[in-house]
Length: 231
Image (cartoon, rainbow, N blue to C red; front, side, top):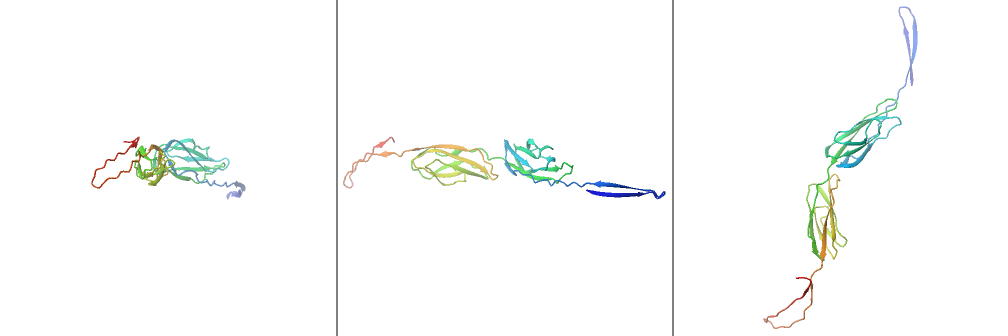
């Protein structure tokens, strides 16, 4: 606090008087930075929290674009805002907040730019549903989309030989079948829906051994093979 003194003189009469005034200087709040994600995936149900560190007794002035849905908070009494992002927003839009102290002093405005990115479109997997045991380099393909990476998962006993991260893989099988899964994700890190494709492994035909035959050159010979469970 500072004390200011004033002396007033009436020049006509020579009379004077004095007064004192006390001035208290209250500090402005610093308004801590907004903490929260700057890149989010569109989802009408997912909640994202944005908040600042507050001083006791402070109030707040929030500004939130109408593209974002305020689920909770974001009022003068709240140091946080709980938001939803149902629609894509690119380029990003800015939320802001300023803190007002209990003494009525307004701090600087803090801002944060948020971009909302949609997940990749729905995809499917194409490829054989039945393969022979010990088949190699069997191709499975997911729907292609620009800017999308693909995470594949194959059954135990099978091996991805090439293509992990792309929309097409080549797989080696042993005697195990199962379900192949793939999840697409865009450059913003937003994952799409995981899809699956079931593959069965069938045994190779079994051929009965035949008796060794001896013939002379240029003579015809008849050989008969017997297979089990195959044609």
